Amino acid sequence: MDAQVTPPPEVTAPVYVYELPVRLWHWITALAITMLAITGFLIGNPAWPLITGEPYNHYIMGDIRFIHFTAGYVLAIGMLVRIYWAFAGNTYAREIFIPHVWKREWRSSFFRTIRWYLLIEPETAKEVGHNPLAQLAMFTMFLLGVLFQIVTGFALYGEGTGPGSWANIVFSSWVIPAFSSSQDVHTWHHLGMWYLVIFVMIHVYMAIREDIMSRQTIISTMINGWRFFKDNRP
Amino acid sequence: MTLNTQTFYELMRAQGTSRRSFLKFCSLTAAALGLEPAYANSIAYAMETKPRLPVLWMHGLECTCCSESFIRSGNPLSSDVILKMISLDYDDTLMAAAGEQAEAILDEIPKKYPGEYILAVEGNPPLNEDGMYCIVGGQPFVEKLKAVAANAKAVIAWGACASWGCVQAARPNPTNAVPIDKVITDKPIIKVPGCPPIAEVMTGVISYILTFNKLPELDSRGRPVMFYGQRIHDKCYRRPHFDAGEFVQSWDDEGARAGYCLYKMGCKGPTTYNACSTIRWNGGVSFPIQAGHGCIGCSEDNFWDNGPFYKRLSYVGAGLGVEATADEIGLIGAAAAGAGVAVHAGLSAVKQYNRKKPEPPVAPKGDQS
Image (tube, rainbow over all chains, first blue to last red; front, side, top):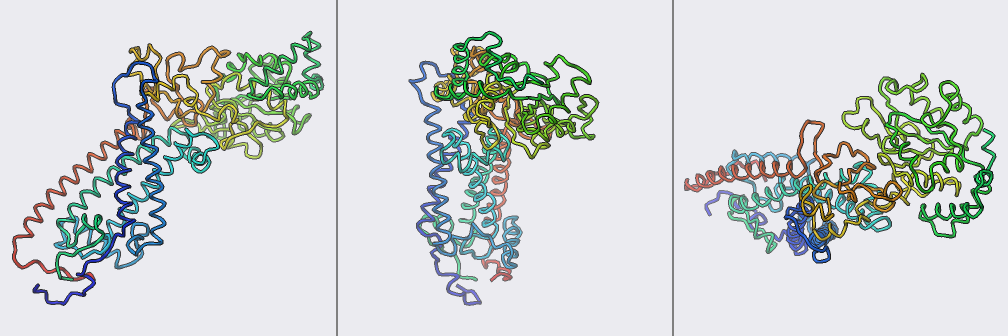
């Protein structure tokens, strides 16, 4: 209200950041990752006690693996659509794929964000898209993590579907030798899951925190697509 | 070496085997190789017309379990393979000759049959200290191996040692033992991994090469697809218990006695490519899972470092002296992240509370656009 500088209108007016395909993809992926983490943990650690009786009466492991594979397909196809949308969508759709680390203003804004998260900076800049630190986390933790899980996951899936199946030809044939054995791929696939679990924890926390403490809306933006700003200062 | 001009069939007839028995043998061999019945004729034709295949069998760093397995082959009988199908000209464990006479054969055969003999390697060469950790006949094994391989038609890597490295190449691998494809790079190598490989797989591979005069179809890692195309898990007779979720929880529990899936007891069947669940061992009598013990994954690369044998998930970071599975490490990481989030959230709440107090908001630094 009593700002000395007249704010440029594009900074204060709401911006349509996340288009519908991005929002749909976000929530579908969130659901898929949740299902994958739960079922994946159970595949590695079938925690239930002894089940007895004829095996044709149960299909517990089979069902868990079915959910895991289906959610894996959803995650992978979603990622393909999302990569397409990086080309087809608006400028914010490209942010998490290519953080502009080579730009000076990106780096100064990056260090300002770090100071903000270290509680040194009194206020953040207005960010229309992701802040630079978030871009970097999205790239290194989310994007690389999910791609790693898709590649190793389909390599393991292709072992079950066998030689000649598409997953075996496209992934298993080179991923398994690259890690030296199937068991090694399993180990890395588990570590990859925890990498994403840690990402999700930080991601959810930061989304809530920034929704409260930053100068723009965060959570509602991923629901309605619009970024609203809370003040008129630049 | 005069025997080399004799065919398998001639030799068999000379020993009093009837033609009927010979054809039966060919049919059984075809069946063991997983070929259709028509191939029995091809095998019979090959055995009738082709001279026996000269084979040199060298031993590096190994435990001789491959040889022990091989001599127990039931079909074809290893005695048939050694004495009739091939001409096993050198094998320091099985041959009668010894000392310089024996070693002379290694020089003689490559000169006499260049490009025609098969080199079978059991064990692997250590490279540290110029190969001094494995001396055979006064010479480092690695040098002998390279020399004999130079004129070979093809090389068979017997067992996990020659194929992947096995126990002597496990961490920390003090002698720098390497699989043979690290030192023989210009010859077709057929890997027959296992610790040891199944006897019938070993004799089957030799029969195939002799019959068709070519190597069997190999996968991307050089293993014969007919024996290593699927995991033990894929054809395990306990697989229905896996899909049902019926797992043995501890040794000698009700599930163990009923023959349930050994997945939770660390069975490596789901990650192991081998034919144990189909061909089985000792003439098809049994195999580890049938005997109530999980697979240890002995035909897999790196299997010694992927322990423990009795846990589903392997330990990570054995080189660092850490004994924890991926999930244990992940839980610690997630707990640390959770603690970090909680502390940060607390500090942020304090900051937010303090920020709201002063009436005129603090002006931004203005170094950003």
